[in-house]
Amino acid sequence: MTVEGRTWAGTTLTDRRAMRRRQLLDAGLDLLGSGGSGAVSVRAVCRQSKLTERYFYENFADRDELILAVYEGVVEDAHRALVEAVDTAGKGAGARAEAAVTAFVTLILDDPRKGRVLLLAPLADPALNRRGTERIPMFAELVREQLSDKTDEGDRAMTATALVGGLANLFTAYLGGGLDVSRERLIAHCVRLVLGANALHS
Amino acid sequence: MTVEGRTWAGTTLTDRRAMRRRQLLDAGLDLLGSGGSGAVSVRAVCRQSKLTERYFYENFADRDELILAVYEGVVEDAHRALVEAVDTAGKGAGARAEAAVTAFVTLILDDPRKGRVLLLAPLADPALNRRGTERIPMFAELVREQLSDKTDEGDRAMTATALVGGLANLFTAYLGGGLDVSRERLIAHCVRLVLGANALHS
DNA sequence: CTCAATTGACTACGAACGTTGTCAATCCTA
DNA sequence: TAGGATTGACAACGTTCGTAGTCAATTGAG
Image (cartoon, rainbow over all chains, first blue to last red; front, side, top):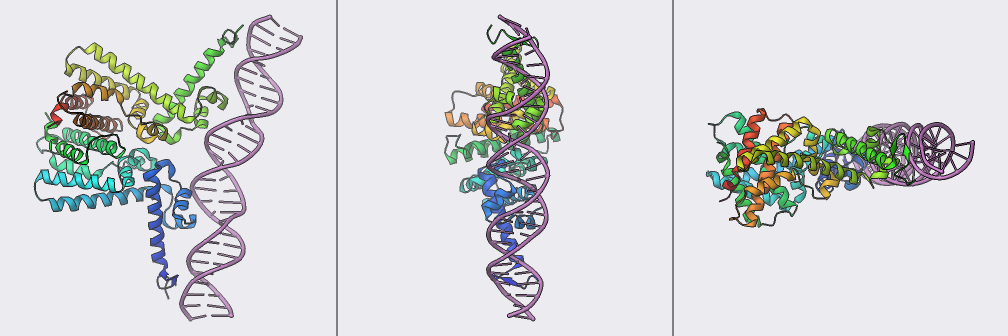
């Protein structure tokens, strides 16, 4: 009878570990996405998830590892949503950009915690900024697709940096209630930004 | 003999208070601009400035008040530098934009701590983001000057938000060593962004 | 010199933290 | 039922924190 076979309350140890990991990540997302970086401590996460510290250390070496795992999980979710939307949208650059932006705006409105993790945490949290994590990395890809190969690397890097920064600032402002425009207008504006990327070059 | 007239080690109480305030603000800038938000505590600031906590509370009600004062001081410095540069530059929009960007890039390279306070702290520090403090507010002004009155408020707000975000991201990346371009090219690119603001509209 | 303000160098308290350990109760297979 | 794994509910330790207080030394005007 191996460890995996033996059950407790009907579940295997492997399953229980996985469930506990899920609980901790969810608690991490709650805290990071609402109270911000400073609200996330080992004890706070354990309190939020109603698990003892033993189970924290069963899954993560330290707080930083949890934070990174939360961030990466949200990046994956967002990336998946964007890829699906873009695959459904078809071949045109305009349609793809609109699908991507729409998917992202929908994701952050459905779950503002995820928006805050993607848009604020990489700058705010020492564990993430030490790692050089990017805000909204999935948009860096989208922007790169729009940039002409005819310009040099420096200009492309700057244009991409500016565009991602612009998008991030728009999403952040909208999410925080600081932009008094409809969702549709925001999306249209972001699409214009993405599609107009090459115009930003000389 | 009033309090102000009485001296201690050759200085009045008023002067000593002012000097201590200066020391605390400098220590705050050191810590916020190098170790980031989490490095700034009452005790850390007192250690850095070599003053006891009594003197901290002589000048500030709490940490948040110090942080805000540090931020506002740096905003003032930056604003002054930009205004002087722009006043010297003359009437043309291009010259003004270039003077402003050049002054800002110079300021953050001369003192990267100030750059980090202006570009990162508003998002990273709870005291500042609770206050809704803006990154590089002096550029919001500059951008506003470029925006046509012929577009509606929503579009203007979005364009300004995107531009400030783009500029902030460029400065942040450059300051952090993540942009492999010369200072001159960065400046030129930023100027193009500012001057091309209206092109971002329909 | 006297006296009061000021300063320097601590102490103290309660709170929260990260990490680890202990003990008893519960679970479940043999 | 027995025994070992697992769980729950703590305790413990040292560290750092925010805030405030104490005591003695220093300063300087009258």
